[in-house]
Image 1 (cartoon, rainbow, N blue to C red):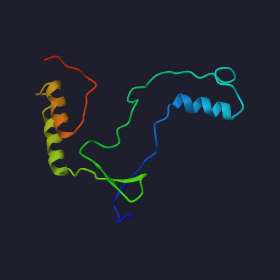
Image 2: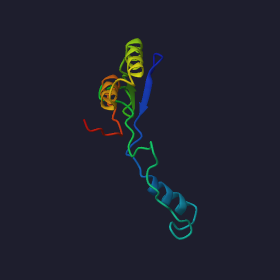
Image 3: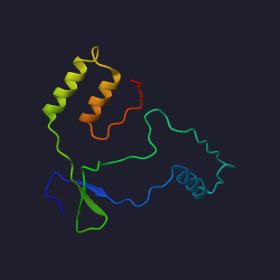
Image 4: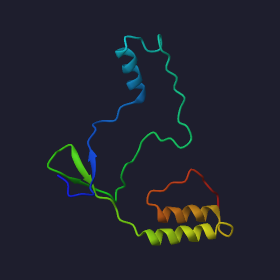
Length: 120
């Protein structure tokens, strides 16, 4: 199916909740959830996400002859241009605002979202 260098993406079906997996594992072990084994939901830790986006809208999937296997069409970027823009930001950190740094990063990295909000 491949010619070398492809990134294959498998259709894994619908997402499942970690809580449901934990409950099923406890039951399959012959125990009762919340009685024999307590489940504590602690929330997200810094940097964790509820959903993972594997590819951007600029990276469409190419269908193969198998309905559950696709090939990722990865967007190409000019490394030297990106590196020079990041170097410019790093060299200007003491001179430009936090908002400007975020704006520059959003131009360099498609889909970049900062966890910081700044008021101009």
